[in-house]
Image (cartoon, rainbow, N blue to C red; front, side, top):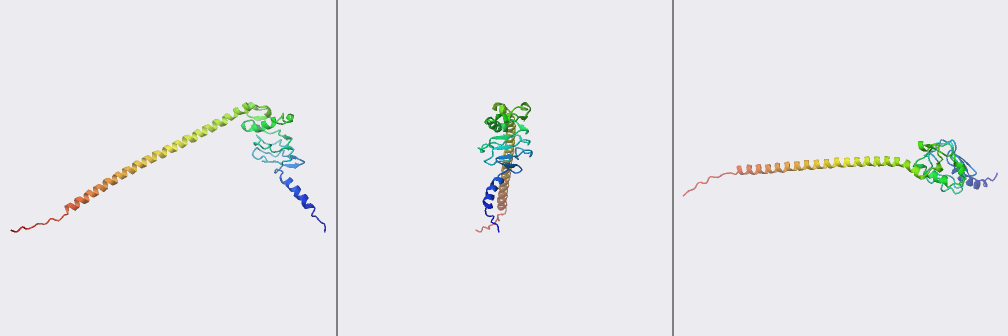
Length: 207
């Protein structure tokens, strides 16, 4: 009988490496290939192997990169990001900062914006922070509008509740007055009835 016990350590070493590979991607020799998977910013893997040196994300549907995705990959040297519909707004700030910190900048000269229209065709790492912050104003305006609408609804509901409480109190006061008046009338009628039914006695006086 052959001794296969030597395979157990090898299996334990290989299993963690393969299990860390993101679903659908192909991994090996420090390279994670996630090309042509129709990945969006929401379906993008949340983490990669710490030993990853190269990530291929080209030909997907990425609009931005989640904040901090590449920060813990100390061995990472390059990420292929071409052929993605990058949306250059507030959410692209992390990717822009990461690209500007890379040494191989030539690799990212064709990573360009698709939307909005004013940034279409612009290289992401050359966008200024002030330019991107202007796209955030729409988001802030919408948030302010929603906040004001919620505040208006809240005040309106509070006003309706206050009117309901006031009307309820007035109705209760009216009922209380009616009850007191009815009780007083009943008491008066009871006293009058008792007085009218007092027996009268005739006394014959003899001398």
